[in-house]
Length: 207
Image (cartoon, rainbow, N blue to C red; front, top):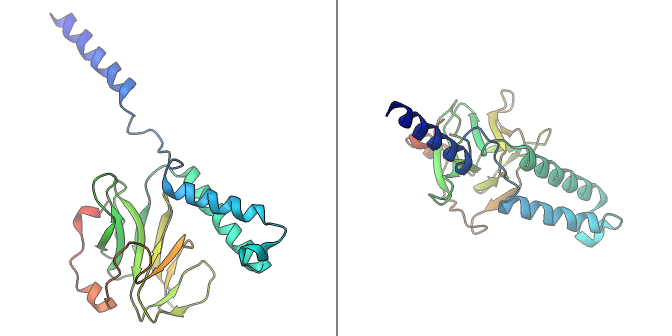
C-alpha cells in the first residue's frame, strides 16, 4: 500500500510538471498587445528611415522616437515579471493597475516607499494638474496644467521619485504613451496632490 501511494504521488508530480507551467519559468510578454503595437510602429518608422518627414517627424524627433520604441521592445522581450511601479516620491502616488484576466485597469493608490505586487500589472501613473514633472531621463521639468496618465509597456520596472533640488517628480524611463482626459480608455479624475495624499493606499496591490 505504501509503495502504491509513493507511485501515485510521483505520477501527480509528473503530471503537474507536464501540464502546469512552473512558477519559476520566465514570462513571455511578446504575445501581448503592447508588443504588437510597439513592433508595428517600429516597422513603420524603419520603412521611412530615409525620409522621416513622411512620418511627420524631424530627423531629431525621428531618432528619439526610434530609440524609445527599440528600448520598449527590448524591455518586453527581456522582462521576467509583470510591470511594477516603485513609489519613491515620498507621497502617495496614483497608479493604474490590473490583475491580469481578473480585473480591468483602474486607479489605485500606492503609498510612499511601496512597490506594486508582481501578480498585478502596473500599467501607468496618474499625475495631477499642478505637478512639476520630468517625464524622460535627463528631460526638462514642466508644470502640468491638467492631469495626465503615463502608460508603460509590459514588464517595465518604473520608478517615480522626487528630485530633491526641484521638487519635480522624475520617471526613470520614458512612458510609452501620455494620455489627457478624454484620450484612451482610462479614467482621469480631477484630483490634486492633496486629494491623492488623503486617499487610503490600496493594500491589495502591494508587494
